[in-house]
Image 1: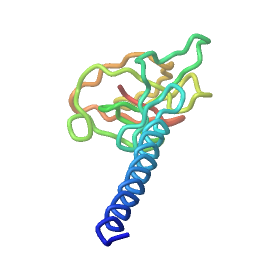
Image 2: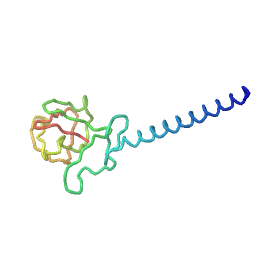
Image 3: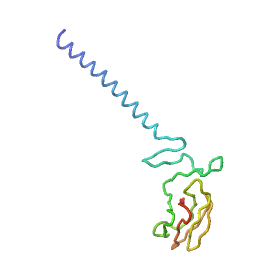
Image 4: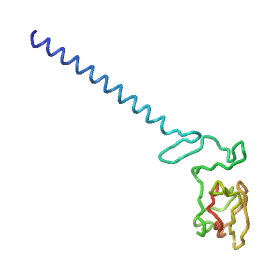
Length: 137
């Protein structure tokens, strides 16, 4: 065998190895993308989003996943409308699936709010979650 035949064989083997490595890399990347979907959730940039907008499932249980624009109210921390959040109408969601009612202080008055109830906040109100964490949507 001459050197040109040996060179062609080496180039051919290298091409086969490169094709195998490309196939393995492609299958790993394809499998990695499918790992980001978990049941009824989709992970985008490290944040979990629900695929549908329903807050209550078919059995009546609350399912909660934060969406863009949601405001999490930590228990015991006060938030002022116009400084921390904008005035307007919000939907109250409980932060715990086992809690159906959350006590909230709005303008100095403590009142119980059920999951998925609506509130209206005006400029200057001070709001805080008293009994548990809550989400304003």
